[in-house]
Image (cartoon, rainbow, N blue to C red; front, side, top):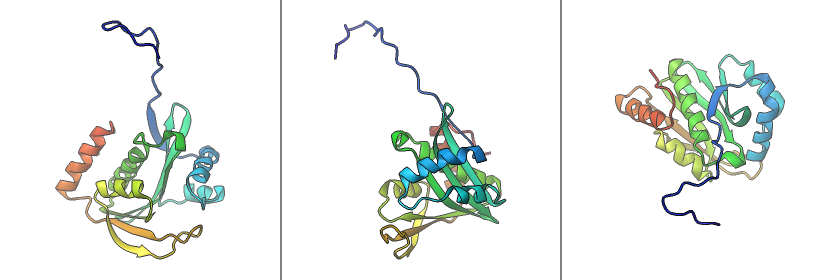
Length: 186
């Protein structure tokens, strides 16, 4: 590595990374989503499962793109006043860049816009990264599904966020969205 002279700017140009955008998942995205699914989960959903989910009126599925490349996805069901997060994953090379958090925040925001007041999900007990994210947003462990995952019989933690209408939670949620450069909820 060559040190630069103090006070002189480098002549090297590092291209800016394309911005991350989030949009609804399309049928043409399923092949790319399935690749991320297979690299992320030992028991991956089939492509037909995604075809079925895109036809489900209660389902909301999003993709995160860097430029034109799908780098993550997430899905939920919004049923009456409840959001059920069904899946979320980011490609290995794009993890640690808050893409999963942006998807998660967008899914919660869509749920709120559709009238949801609470949310739930299941997560592997050993998935500390995901559990920390969910707890950051106010989710709490409420139960356990023993040997829920077929691949290794790991337990699932059932987590709930009970009140997405409280002024305290909304203030926190707005601050998190602002920090992620996401549009305001209201």
